[in-house]
Amino acid sequence: MTRGRTEVHFHLLPDLDDGPADAAAAVDLARAAVRDGTTTVVCTPHARFLTGARDLADRVAALRGALRRAGVGLDVRPGAELQASDVARFGAAALDAFSQGPPSARWLLLEAPLDPGGVEELHAAAADLHAQGFGVLLAHPERSPQLLAADGGLDALLDRGVLLQVNATSLTGLHGAAARRNALDLIDRGLVAAIASDAHGPDRPPSLSAAVALLRDVGVEAPERLVAAGPRALLRHGLRATQRV
Image (cartoon, rainbow, N blue to C red; front, side):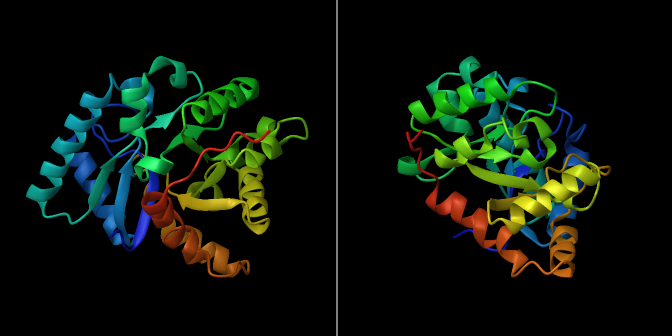
């Protein structure tokens, strides 16, 4: 059973995207996660850097070996962070390999657009994933002002069963004051299923403890649930897609 803090958005695979440059850097980043109180990390490289299911499996197996040799007790699992354009790029087998949860309630991490535009493509990608039977966990919506705008359609996504993941680094101010305000607002409204570090390396380290401390300071009740019980439930019980509009 998965216990402790659980990261569902974390760039830990080395020599792939903008995460750790090599295995040694990945081991250091994993050690930092353990020091931060994390026991489980879903490795979520940007999917566009992967060739498919076998590539992901091989990379995770190599990382597990490196962590075992280094004596780092961290449960690492395969996953991916999808841009909207990735949904059509990969077939069913790859998407299933990238997904989390039990067979009847698999879900995928889909990135909220960071650049102007992209909202329409996001909605189409979420609908495509739902049509294929996948639930959607939306990564860092607080960093997407166009999605949070009145005409961005966030409520429509929520009505279709999409859940939200907020970045710890947004709460700590790394992505600016607006992202921090947005993150706190989404949490205050009870819309956030999980907080994740979205860690990449020393400049964006594991930061769940800092996020929990900040939330306690501003009066959020039981913030630990958003880094432990919440993400654990996503892995154990999954997220069912819904076709509501």
